[in-house]
Image (tube, rainbow, N blue to C red; front, side):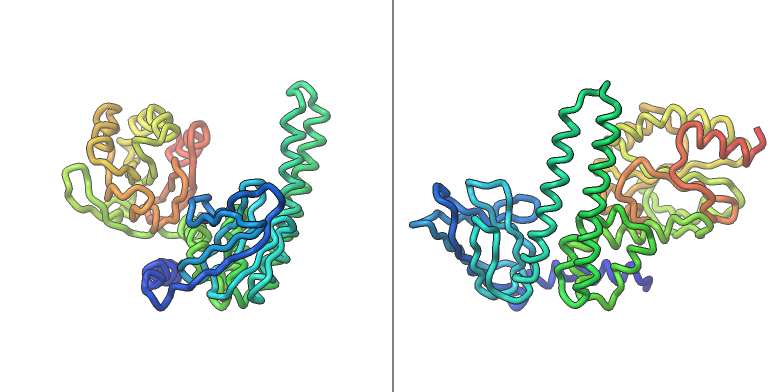
Length: 359
């Protein structure tokens, strides 16, 4: 089994295992709040509500059960700044006015680094607010503020990377990796996703693993990876039926619901009609969910090339196998099935095909 499949499998297995009783953990979170605060909320990292505690005489308490090593936020109704904590089975005490946490060693460590990162995040948000207030014609001021924003953001990223490097033996880095992995190079992803790190199989790292897989599977000079999906008639086909047979093949990752994808179709039709007699093929791998919308888009726009899909949206084989996290996306493959270009559109695609076909 390929390494990336093994790791993603382990990560996804964690979701299943956490559903079992022995992998759950009690949380007991109490603390103090500033004057005037009436309620405290426990939310997921995506701001989905989990629990609510009403304040009594300046104090709050909430108890429950969540999967072990789940990151959650605690926020009151008087502030916009959440306190991040990790569910690990130990009681936690929070001073909401100071954003400090007392309890397990890992939560105290998390709180220490998170407050520093929060301060840098606030600085970056303030830079953005200042930039938004500058008029479009004030070019010098805008350029100056862009440089300030870039410097502040770089400080934030550096701080997160330092936390990740300093904590390979616990799951704290997963929180920050999930926020900045899309800025990493392939070498950085390999460094931070080293399988010896305790956080590498945390569910928050799934996106980073998918991006690493994308880099590894779509590098120029890499041979294509085969997959099987069905055509509009429900017949299964492998990608290898079309790729590596001597033809130049464009694998187009798209969906009928993707406006930028559909905006490219008239140009793709022109390119396809120009070179199809020379053996140029397009294989569309759709991220659609409904068969009707997929087939209607093909028919209505007369997309007369090969189309495959398993209609599983972002969980499609095309997405998982190639680590595709945004569309439109594409691969251009030579006659041997080796990737020679990626994500070519418009004039760039025209230029590359003229280079290949000579006109």
